[in-house]
Length: 513
Image 1 (tube, rainbow, N blue to C red):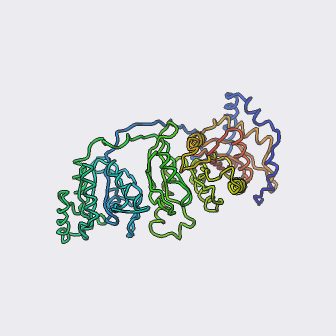
Image 2: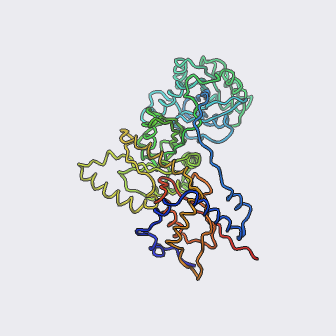
Image 3: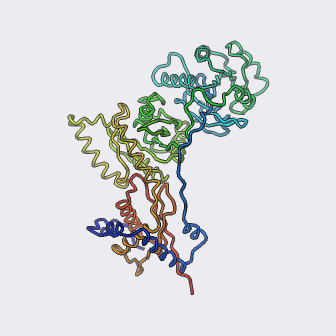
């Protein structure tokens, strides 16, 4: 078997002044379709299965539109640290979505989830623990909890019934009274009927009847939700209109490269907690923002650390949720810190996006620190270009944007890059044009002979978009280098800037007469 070395395919790296583009441009669409139909008929001489037949019938792509829906009512869950707010969120959702750990302060941002109870859909907002006189990152966490109260229709105030009302709880009560929102006092950690008298002591807070629940075991949560849906409005008085069609953008990168700062600047508010402490974000944070005159759904994610399998507790679950957020996204913005050398970790995150098949944009953050007049800045810029050439050559097709998330510099250039990547991600080449491309390509650069045989490409079609996926029916296995050559020529002729291209093969033998 031939080895896949770069030397094997040097002849394809510089194709010179060939006429492939000119020939394709001059080819009439009808003639291209006639050629493809002739090649399609020739496939009948080969063994094809039902899956092949279904593929050859073609796939119709629907148009995506933006749909405006009524804004869902918002239920905010607040309380001091470690009283079980995230556990209650998971119980309401019916799944382990929010990160839960015995350590106080795991949740830091206000994180939204879609929930449903008794055929009523609503938004649940999980918050970090509120504490008076908090400093540093804890002050930012508390501020997010206060914002969540203001932007809610109903508030669930969670108190640890086994501890009883504390001075911090009394501070929260004063906040809630100023907000003038419907408030449900949730006495958590009441695991059985013998502990219910502990909840009765919470009448002293002056918020009405305590609702004894056990978020861990589910006890009393159904009764609580029955009462909550009675006071929820049909349409939220505070939330933005629900938008069905914004493109989903996942913001990825290693810890402390500026992902949360980018989301805050795009949203025009302190939407997520930003701190010098690496790993501040733990739950993926969704936010609908308007950038460049269009609505986008940005998803800030936890920083991906070097070794996921060595992580423990909240960091481990944060990594899992980051991967899940990427799967739900359409395009990934990988944020890179230009003040630090590109690392193996950065390349691994980019490869993670490629494996997921999502469109890709590279955002080089903290560009404002590379001052043209500063010698160190000039040296770093020179080294950066060399690092990009060496480590990111396999994603040279990805749009690059130099930004400063802290100041907002060049943030407007992010939108054209996102639009270009998504347009390429959705791009489809007609079957006739694609087969004409293959015919001209093979005529100029046939596959090398391997082991006395030369595999032929019988027919090709684009099986799907998102990402563009092509299927080649062949008489033998195509060398990986030749497939990369086909990908490169596809990019030269049709763009595909910002999206991976997948080329699959179906090796078929001629039918026995």
